[in-house]
Image 1 (cartoon, rainbow, N blue to C red):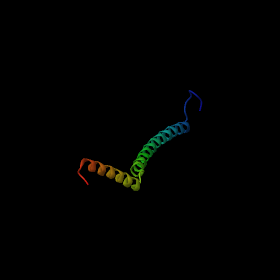
Image 2: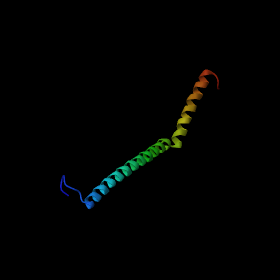
Image 3: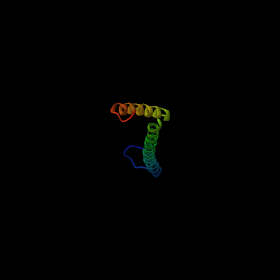
Image 4: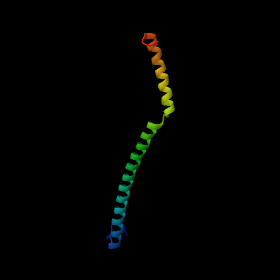
Length: 79
């Protein structure tokens, strides 16, 4: 294929197929990147949800209840 010259049928076919291949590749990459972002967001959401163990939550709850009980005793609501 020479620059500025007439394209043969085989060269035109090759050029069209290359353009089509590039477009399909771009669309697939865009789709896969969107799917990866969705999956990463889901995993991050699960990580945030389960990052704190139930033992840590129970310990924090016990500390809070202890502090609340102390305040209630000081206010005269509990003995």
